[in-house]
Structures are given as structure tokens and as C-alpha cells.
Image 1 (cartoon, one colour):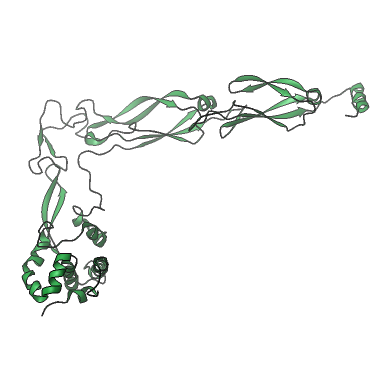
Image 2 (cartoon, helix red, strand yellow):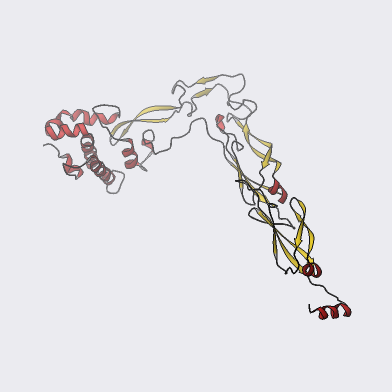
Length: 361
């Protein structure tokens, strides 16, 4: 008696290919033997149904010939799953496979595009996170600083190729230098071709007659490294500079990681930063506040003259344009804001007090 594949997947005969695919995924999840609701026999039956209905041409033949088509395909349906390239066999989309078997195991590593492949001999070096403390003016104007880091660098004996100088490096004959081999693996679905890391060379694709005696065949060593770092003008406290390739060297000739340098800016006892603006305070005497004056104001770029209008009140803030900090990510500069405080006179003489009363101040 022939099997009704539409009934197996619980879909109508007029179902679209997307509906058939969704039904297959649902059933495969439900009956997979690794799940609590698993049923190996039904799981195989669901897969067999999708082999036919999931392919437009096979589905058309099945709809036309029914059980005759099933008998004609009996050999192909069972044997076809052992190799995905078999034209008469199982023809499942790799995305379907990744969705259905995600988390089941590593046997699908070679097929599922959603599973990250292991790296072989070339591994990226580690990133480094470090902190650099700089002066306030270094952040305002930029600077060049020298730092020392202990990190992994390319071995200077083997130049990173991991072999003792003068010895041979031979291409692995098992994987032909690819670092991966194809194996046939038996699963509940039949035999499958999977790619794995070559056991003979450990995934490097090379065999060393003698590994480097200095780095022990890793291609890297630890050293204290001096580096000159350019601090950009306008950087703020807590911001991080990323320096590509300044991290640790990768083992086996892998590329360097990056250096992430967090900047700590020391406080300044004269200036306070506010974004790209600078704020400060100054004191003026009672006479300057009443009559007005021109006073010297210290900025990060030097001393400038500031006009104090007559009648200035304590707490008044004046703006000095373009005397702030350069914009790190654009053009232009911030401003310098000065808050004026009036110094109240003390220890006045009787005569001075009487004069103040006389003029009504």
C-alpha cells in the first residue's frame, strides 16, 4: 500500500511549497529522536515525504503516478540521502537543515551555514584593553605618548611560521594542505558526508619536522613592546581609541588583534570641560563691578582681554568665542565661558563705610 505523503505532513494537496516546507520543519522538530516527543520511524517517514513533496519535479511525478512513482524511486529515496549531490536522492535546502538540527549536535558542522566553522592554523590574536592617563592640555591639543605593553608578538626566531629555522615544513598528505578531511558518518538518517579537522596535522595543513625551540611551535612569544600613540585633539575623559593591529599576534601566523585604549583625563584646577566648551571663574573687585574694566582672563590658548561692563552683577557669565576645544569628529571649536564673582570688601574703615552710605551703595 502506497504512503500518502500529504497526510504524513498534514498538508492539503494544493499546498504551496512554502507550506510544505513549514509543515516539514514542524514535524521534523516534533519527531526528532533526540527530543522528548521523538519517534524515529515517524521521523524517517516525514523525511521521506519531504524528499518527494519538497521537490517540484518529484512532486509532479508523484501527483501523476502515485504508487508507481514511489516504487520507481524506492532505491533513490533511501540511498540518495547518503550524499547531497546525488541527483536522484534527497534534495534539502541547507537552510532547512540548519533550522531543523540546530543544537542537536556537531555532525552537521560541515553543512549548516549557520554554524561557525572552526579555524585551523591561522587564529586572530587577542585584543588588548588598556588605560592611559593624560593631562588636560593633552586632551585639548592632542599629543604623542609612549606606552609599554607586555603582549604576544611574532616569534623573531621562526618569524611566526612555527618551524625551527633550517628545518622542513611538509604539506600534510592526509588533507593535502587544506586542514580538513571529508568523512562518511552513520546517522539515524543514513550515511552522511561531513567535514572535520584533519587529525594528522591538527587543522594546520602542514607537518613540521621540528618546531621552533623558542616559541615551542606557537609562532608567538611574550615581550614588552614600546609603542608611540597619537592622542587626537578634543578627546574626552572615558573615550576609547581603537588601534587596529596593535593587539596581540595570532598563533600560527594569524593576524594581530586590536588595542583598545581608554583615556583618563586628569582634572585641571583652573578649567572645567563641558563638551567642547571650557568653563572657568574669576574674581573682580567692587570698583570693577560698579565702574567696569578690562581684565585678563586665562584660557587654554593663553591670556585674553575681557571687557567687564559697568554694573556687572556677581554670577554673570561671559562668553569668549572659539577659545574652547577642537571638535574631535568635525570642524570648529567650542567657546570659553567665564563666571564673574564680585569680591566683597572687608575691614572697611569708618570713613569708607560713611562714603558708601553717602552714595547709597
